[in-house]
Image 1 (cartoon, rainbow, N blue to C red):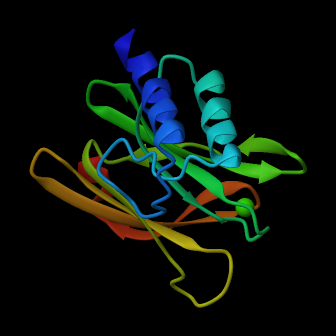
Image 2 (cartoon, protein in one colour):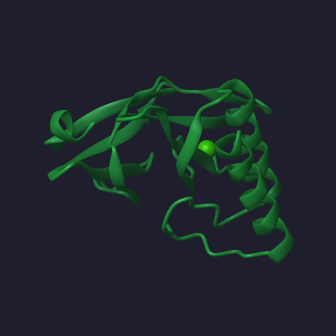
Length: 154
Ligand SMILES: [Ca+2]
């Protein structure tokens, strides 16, 4: 129960304090708190009931000028998944989900190939195993471009 309330509680705190740091922070990352972001978070929580959010990240991932949301969330004790919530024609669109690291997750947005849309790098651990992967949104789906060790850390 607490795990379901906590993200909403933290979101409320961010809105109240007006923090506007767009950088990644330690989990849970609720740095931005703009109206579009909170609506995307609400969309995710509503459509993924009972899933504990571990980390949020915000960036325009489909090159439409509007920020999108990346969410890493727990599906079981040692299994995490990630999906993105994209702005789409005035509403929101959830992407496919892909495995995400179990602990020490970091999401970094970087334009690797110097052309839109933005790529994002996810790294983390499972026990002592470290892995990372580079993703991009293509046609509303998260595509795994390349990586290393993800099978051991996800
Ligand atoms: Ca976008």
